[in-house]
Image 1: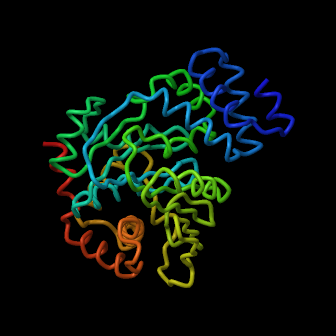
Image 2 (image 1 turned 120 degrees about the vertical axis):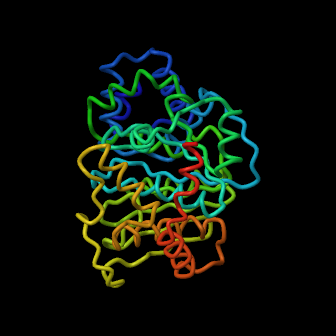
Amino acid sequence: MYIEKILNRGSLSGEEAKNCMLSIANGELNSSQTVALMTAMQFRGLELEELKGFRSALMELAIPVNLGFENAIDVCGTGGDGKNTFNISTTTAFVLASMGYKVVKHGNYGVSSLCGSSNVLEHLGIQFSSDSRVLQRQLDKTNLCFLHAPLFHPALKVVAPLRKQLGISTFFNGLGPLVNPANPTHQLTGTYNLELAKLYQHVLQKERKDFTVIHGIEGFDELTFIGATRILGKMKDEVIPGESTNRGILLADLSGGQTVAESAKILTDLLEGKGTNSQNQVLAGNTALALQTFHPKESFQNAFDEAYQFILSGKAKQSFTQLLS
């Protein structure tokens, strides 16, 4: 019923979308039907009530995690932009934590990309846990804890291999940043698709104290300064220009490497202040947007300068080093 409705360009109500997701999680849709649904939804595009319904089901099914924080941010993108940039969101998370901000990052293995946040952190020796006590200790000690999505969304175990086999972005990419079980107060997130960015703006209005949604006009789910970037928030709809900034950044400058080991080295080099100028600018830009999410009245340039100098100092590795110890 769900597949046929979508193929006929119909829309699922919020309740239908929720029941559809519950049916997938409960195994009531077989593999072929689930793949057909993902493909049809990706072709037609996700709508607001569907996004809300799918999210509601996943939050209901998620393993709860209770963390004590007054203010904390999640920094993540949808992935699926196919650009193979370095792990910008993950690196930004460590920079923020080292600057003293609480970060509760939700992430996963790469599905439509070479190296997701979980791939690179696992390679670097980070131990994943779903124990709230462990996560709370990490947050208290390092200002950061990492929520490996499969540990908190076991109902979606059946979907993971299907997504991997498809090898393309699906609506599950769009759901990932919205289903952090810790419900952080703030969020910096990016989407490769403008329509999805606008849907995020609607959903996050009620879910976060403040938020920033990034959409690179050239198809990036992060701020890269390659082409213009649309920035959406509670009271914000702005464009950060690309070419007019004269930064001279090329896609090749932001490569995440060809292996997980290469991606991991780029991350640690950046945290040690050993990144290239292009990498440092992009990392500082994304960190600046996170800082503005906490401090909306601060100018982008001031936030950028603060982040850039901190990154060059090598102090950004503090949180990462503490998390490993």
